[in-house]
Image 1 (cartoon, each protein chain N blue to C red):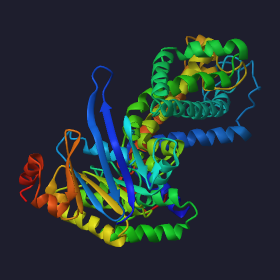
Image 2: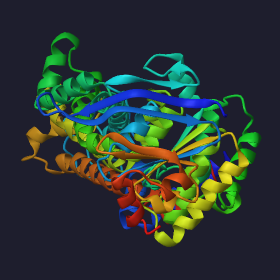
Image 3: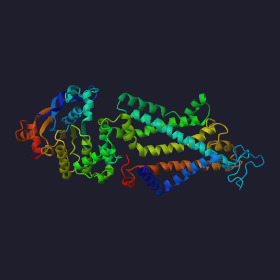
Image 4: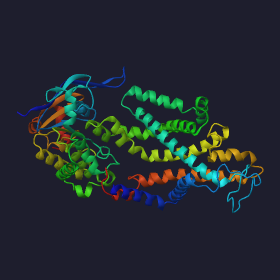
Length: 256
Length: 292
């Protein structure tokens, strides 16, 4: 069995002012192992984005514990620093995840420069070209462009390259395919497949409301419904023998 | 360095293509040139007066005429240009530093700091620049430094209020979240991601502040709380001649024309620079090489 990288236990989270608080997560348990792709699936408001943001230290849980490689990631702990140094993020809107006034090459290089401060600039350039190549983009052509000159698919692939440039151990892709044209989704899925092949130990957490787009890439699926874990298991088993009516509805909606 | 030169050339060329940009570059270029020349040469010494030729009309000896004590108007305007250049430049620097500091506090992730700074800016913005200058005059006396401090304070508050929406938009963006997640210190995120994304508003606001500081200098000097007596400035030239506008209107016309020409140029500079220096607005700038 591969090492457990991220583990969340008994996670609860509420939003809103006192008196009008709404709980969005109820005692959620989740783990992510090295090298696996975990898809977190659920409808709008199911809590999937909140859960993954808590797992990556972008939000704090009201109660419960999140551990990264055995270290608690609560604010100020060593675990959070380790997690930030060893994780990458891909957001839903590719254009809002790239600074519009930074060239593509600079945006992709940023996490690498921050995490490997002593890396010579030639090595940074080489790594940027390597990761852009990995997601099917040419660094020589696109490296000096601004995001405004990219298509949605190109911008999302740049965002993926940026997330993996510093060789993270875990990557979170939050609805990374939702804002992408259906015709371009295949390119993005291919890019995710390529980065997993390039680093087989890297864990990938894909958040999506659509089972159809993650079934080809996810090893395991966790279904969230109204803040609770509805069902989880290996992709093939869950798709073929789902125990939950809600999951079956999601499967039907995805026309699988 | 070579890339920076190319970028500067592209920006200047783009500005030159617009009528407003061309006008502002010419007028501001002349302003800087005259200020530099006045350091080493003016047609007459500022102390030179000629009691036999007061209120004289423009002539070969005095191209813009003389004032009530027979001093050469052109020499005083030339010398005044450097005072106004320094006041405008320093006011903009103080306003930018103070304003950006306030913006940093207003978009801070610390809720209390953000809330307090928003209320503070809203409260202080109601204090008129003249009042600030008057208050500063009490302990420090009338001087160019008081004008700079009063203008920098007032324009910094304005800047902060106007920049806040675009700064908030950038601060809440996914690219800022990614940069923070990657371990970039908050101050560096502010300077490299947030400030550049407010640049279109920042540039226009600062150029207008420079123009307004010239008007403020004239107004404050007229009120007696501007530059000290004997210090050449356009405001000083206006203040000393405006009382005699009925006797010799030209003596008011020259400094008035210079102030108007420069303030218009500064206002147009902001628009031209915004369109020329922003890679999102200027496609010519997006054709260059990676420079970061």
